Length: 64
Image (spheres, rainbow, N blue to C red):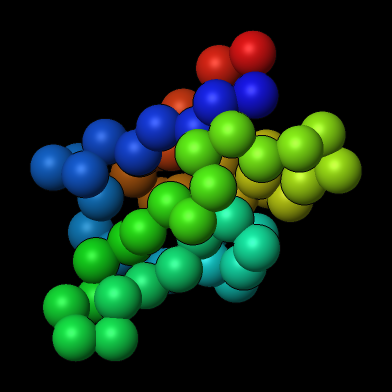
């Protein structure tokens, strides 16, 4: 699985960080979403899919 974020679309709401903190984080200085692991293992799939659904702007994409 590969994760991409449409950063121009992202408004850093942080829902992805709450849903999948092993994969997403917010920068401390700029509150920009960071992808900690662009290719997380299958054990994170449910959390990443939840994060993608929770994103209010649908800025997260998951590719298999």
